[in-house]
Amino acid sequence: MRVFRAGRWVAAAALLLGITGCTGMAEKLSTGFGLWDSVDPAAQPAPLPPITATVTPRIAWQASVGEAENFVFSPGIDAEEITVASHGGEISWLDRATGVLLWRAKTGQSFSGGAGAGGSLAVVSTLRGEILGFGGRGELKWNAEARSEVLAPAQVAEGLVVVRTTDSRLFAFDAADGKRKWVYQRANPPLTIRSTAGVVIYRGAVFAGFAGGKLVALNLGNGAVGWEAAVALPKGTTELERVTDITSAPVVDDRQVCAVAFQGRLACFEPRGGSLLWARDLSSYSGLAMDDRYVYVTDDRGGVQAFGRETGASVWKQDKLLNRRVTAPQVAGTLIAVGDLEGYVHFLSQEDGSFVGRIATDGSPIAAKPARFDNRLLVQTRKGGVFAIEVP
Image (cartoon, rainbow, N blue to C red; front, side, top):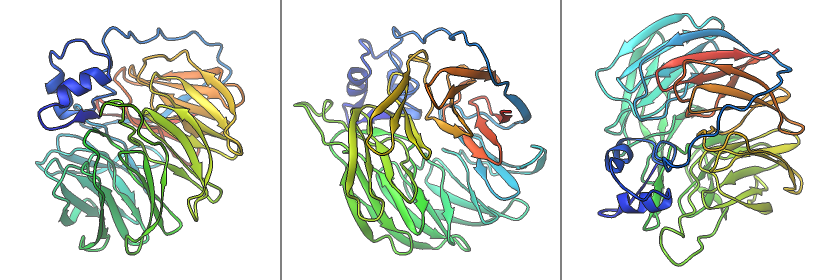
């Protein structure tokens, strides 16, 4: 992610991140992941905390795909296959059970985000804003135009493909032929954060968070707005102080939909009408997860926190991963999993946040929230390693 504004975004990003000098900042932020990659160099990552392991995760299988460069890639999971993409324009299909390579396509283009998958369709996005839909044995079925950079994986559901661009537009395309069905667009504040925030599709609705702290629910079929709510309201006197962007996907089930904003709040709403249930002051750019009892959030310093679902009461906080560029949490059975900048996946107790296990991957950063499928977790590293992890 980066902070941008014509002629001013480098200085603004430096202030936002507490950086006193801007050497190399323009190059880092113009291509990549901004807040995650460009944290104040004086803020050293906490050393790997010692743990007394009570669970022993193991790598069920691993595969190697192309590197992510300065972008954030995550796998797409379908019924029988896992689709993974790389910045260099390769897209690979892996057997879901074994990780064996089934087939691979080389497009000659540069991809800008992770793969979306569903209904035997795989979707990737290029740096030029093209949306490519692949089917069957890796053949290109269609391509469509978003005309702006897409950093988040597409979501595929109910015969539609929904993508989000960095200029706050949502596009829905027909999954069969790529024809555009609808577009939703909203105006951005003067200063925003370039992020990999995606959308969530649930029970015929599309949920997405935007710059300025707004959460919106749209009708999947036609893009009509069902409701809009404020996760956070801008505060302060300068544009920089007033940045309260939602930079991660919300989480939703039948009971509530929750989202978190950078320099803002964690807030949960009633999913049908958008009525506020509760909110807590919190800043996060990584994101959140939810189970039957708790909402879990990684804050902007790498602390992992748990809040009760009914009232938002604080339950626990794990703060020993400070400045380790911790991903959004993922629920893994009775555990919580997060990745970090050295390619470790840490497992925390849902009850008190204590460390109960850890596993290494290839030593390069895990930037995206771990994915969940069957009884396994799936992570993709910046070097292009794909790891399916089992926890007894």
